[in-house]
Amino acid sequence: MLAVVAAIVFGIGFLLDLLGTRIAGISGMTFALLGLTLLALHQAGVGTASIRSRYSGWRGRARR
Image (tube, rainbow, N blue to C red; front, side, top):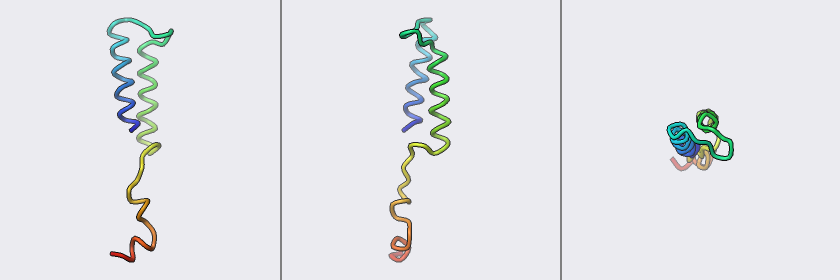
């Protein structure tokens, strides 16, 4: 999920940089840095749900 948000933020930053405009004083570079932060959080595993965590444990192994 964070990777999708990062892609959107990168797109907004790219358009701002391309047009040379700012939104409320925030430039395209700020959006690029925010996108990099979101990608780093995604790579660290923040915000990712694991399907296996729900079925792990002794009950999940006993059924197999």
